Image (tube, rainbow, N blue to C red; front, side):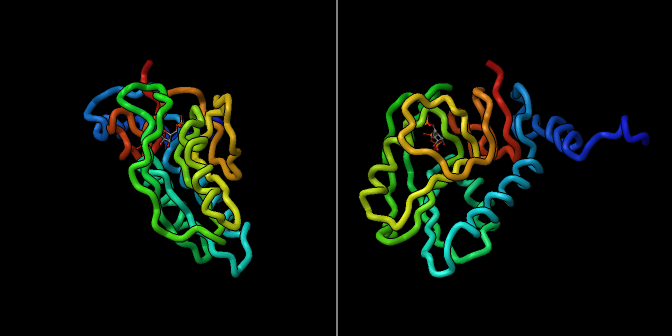
Length: 200
Ligand code: PRP
C-alpha cells in the first residue's frame, strides 16, 4: 500500500470504533467518535507518568475519584501511576436526564480516608460548567491536605466562574455532549471504550 493511501493507526482506531459502536449502543446513533480508545489510552499513560513524577518518594498521595463519571478513567489512570498511592471516591451528582448541567450538586458519599497531610488529587472525567468542582473543592480544602490538585480527563473550557484550575488535563474537549469512557447520558453509554458526541 502506498504511504499516501495508507490509513494511519489513529484512523484505523476510529474506523474500528465506528464499526463497533452499534453493538454497544443497541443501534442508537452517535454524532461522531471524538477520542478513540487508543488515543485515550496513550494520553492516560502520559498523565500517569506525570503524576508519578510530581511528588516526592515519601509523599502520601491519595487519588479521589468523583463517581460515577470517573470510574473508567480512574481505573486506567491508577494503573499508569508507578509509585505508591491510595484511592478513594466521592459520589456527587449534578446532572438529571437533560444534556445541560442543572447547577445543583448532591453529595451522596463522602470518603472516610483521612486527608490531613496527604497530597490529594481529585480525579474528574470532565469539567463542564465547573459546578461540581466549585462545590466540592472547598470541603476537601477544609480537611487540611498537604496539597490539593485536580486531574480531569476532559476540560471544555466553558466554565465562567471556575474557582480551581486543573493541574492535569487529558484533552481540551469540544463543547458537545460527550459520552463513553465513564460519561453518560441518562446513565447510558458509560461503557463505550471511546468518547463520542451525541446528535443534537
Ligand atoms: C458529571 C461529570 C462531572 C460533572 C461535570 O457528573 O461526571 O462530574 O458532571 O460537570 P460540571 O463541571 O458542569 O459540574 P454527573 O453529575 O452527571 O454525575 P456522574 O458522574 O454520576 O455521571
